[in-house]
Length: 64
Image 1: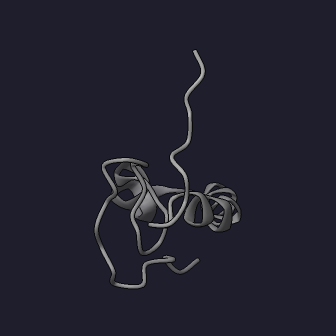
Image 2 (image 1 turned 180 degrees about the vertical axis):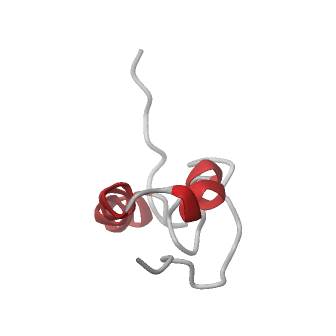
């Protein structure tokens, strides 16, 4: 399964996600070792991550 990387590599300090592909540093680093099932689960989350971490998006609140 191909990487979702689009070569816009910068991780947002606010969200922890890459602003280009929406993955975390751990997901980027481990991508080659992940199973296709795990990769697909991550890919399925990316649209929501990118929408919530776009520059114009409101900061997400954390609940404890």
